[in-house]
Image 1 (cartoon, one colour):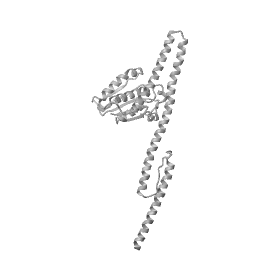
Image 2 (cartoon, one colour):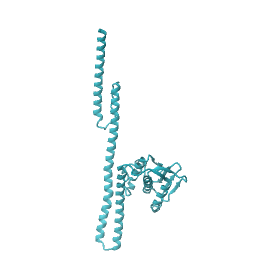
Image 3 (tube, helix red, strand yellow):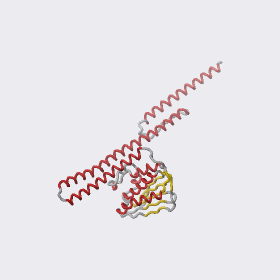
Image 4 (cartoon, one colour):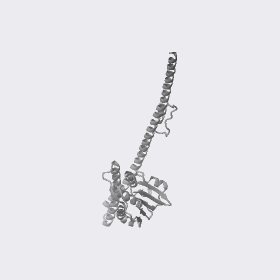
Amino acid sequence: MKYLLMVSVVINILLIAKIVAMRLSVKEITSDFAHRADLQSNTLIGVSSRDKQIRTLAKEINETLVKLRDAFNRYRLGDAEVKTAITNITHDLRTPLTAISGYIELIEKSDDKEEKDRYFSIIKERVGHMKKLTDELFEYSIITAGEPTEEKLEVNVNKVLENSLMNFYPALKERGIEPEVNITEEVVVRTLYPSYTERIIGNLISNALKYSDGDLEVTLDEKGLFKIANSSKELSNVDVYRLFDRFYTVESARNYSTGLGLSIVRVLSQRMDLSLNAKYEEGRLVIEIGF
């Protein structure tokens, strides 16, 4: 009986010690969490306890903290991007609006028909620029708003590329660009969203028009690797790294778009699980997509 009583006392002492240790560990976690909850620090909660349940609790809290920090950083980055975008878009819209207002005043004051026609031509060009900006914004909002509304079908990538090049040929000719085209004779057929495929290739060719110094190389090999490359001294490795960010534009291309074209390419590529890569080598911008 005495032996059982001693065992009971020892067990109780051990249980009390364990409870005290667990309380200290919980207090330690609580204190650490209070310091980490502002999401400004990259450090995680540490715990000295060897208790399996306590360590599991700390591990799960740390995993939650990591997710919260990622979400917070994305929100903060997105907020900064939106502010920058609003500034850029406001500038891009205000500039042609100011010009339009000025030319309208000149038209009202002028009696020269030839001069008025010239002013109307300039106004038309400015309005076209504004329409392009608003169309890009509308398209981006639609694309990112929800899931695809079409079904995946077998798409002949060769044909889509050929049609896109033909559509852009007048613009390329106007820039004096004679593209070097290498399309495999083997038909590359993939199960894709047709409109997404057309948009990706079209946006990439459009992007080349903005940044090209006068050349363009387009390649599609038998494995489905699509590559578009052009010389561009205006770019840098930093620019290429950020080209797919929302609203990012290189200063020299600010007059052409909101900077959403390549961001749309990234969104559509991700939805079709396509590889996407960009690099800057020896003064050339090279973008590759694996269909």
